[in-house]
Length: 572
Image 1 (cartoon, rainbow, N blue to C red):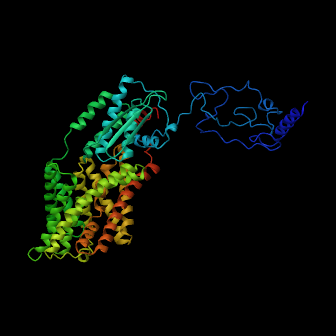
Image 2 (spheres, rainbow, N blue to C red; image 1 turned 45 degrees about the vertical axis):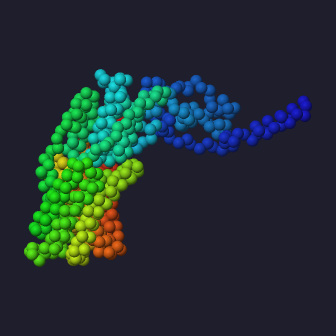
């Protein structure tokens, strides 16, 4: 043997003594392998010869013993390499690859509404979403895929234009597509653009479609009809043709309330808001008249094609003018004064503040849709700037006319709980009519708004809690009750929530901030407007938190009929 061969043999002997870096030292017991139940790569152990699908588990009975295969003795030896999964004397280990019989199907709770199930799947990683079980349909074919995607986009367009949050729109689109047999779908929602992509398999090209949302409105009756359609689709009770026909009927349906009633509701909302902050009968009439004039001016601007910013400027001006006139004519009109004039302007702001858009913006931000949330917040900012612009112009004109509007007098105590409760419920009812809620929803929404105001008044005036904390708690109860009713009705929560937060909107804080700016007290104005922003955020966060608590803690009653729920959960 040459010297080179001796050196090679010595190196090999030392390598064998040292062992592999992945092999435990001799005499050290192996740690127990983790339980593989529930792993994404290991089917649940069901005994010998069990199956998880159509293929049996691979048999390892004929495989040589792990110890013999690696030069060790006995299946229970603690030396050598780790036992393989399924070998004798070892626990079931995890697979480093997807097993040939597939990943076990994850099933979601069957008694949950389709909104919760679709939302739960959207929050899952794509690789962990449960697969569909095939549902036989006469139109299930390659030619139906573009039509299903088109129907899904049209439904999502109505929801997004109606003010639904981005996550709820995605969940609805996801549920419709899966109900018609499209498994690998990815919906996408931004403020003005909807898209959906379907890839039949990993080796096929995806099919992508998109749709732009150009017009927005607030018709919660139409929104409820869309949710009923989605409920039937996810229950497999509406074919593709039926869904198209019903969707066309929903788009053709007229608004439930005539135009004169909507204008009157705007006036009633402003009058109720004025009474809520301390006004009397005369102030109610003045605030209602200002809001009616502002609504007609806004409709005139809309008919001329002016942007929404100028519509809000025009709508905010008459209420401020009515407050200035009431202050100037205080010596001639009995019952007027500083408090009354401020109440008129504050009531007009209640009718204009974009609470619906603010709640949707904060909800999108809390659920991770930051682009859509940023766009909604920018929209809210533009609308509020329009309101500020219209009111501030009138207030500057009033200051130049030596009109004395003292915010200290306007903030005087007003403690008439029965009157305030009636005003809060009237404000909520008028707000619900403006949002065109279904007539059957109006009593429930009005009661929810009254409860919100009672909770706020008790916490703030009786307990002495901070107005921001009291507002957040009251808004949380609004979200709690609203989402609970929506779960029982399998409907959108917006009709039950949006109008009920009306009494909690920061109308007075906004007005007093603007008044301080017009009087040259910038520090007071900044503090008041910051308080208004904090109150608005407290309203939005409280509503969202109430909805999340409902989803986490409350389940549907056990005695609820299960027929529709059982059909709706097929394949999930």
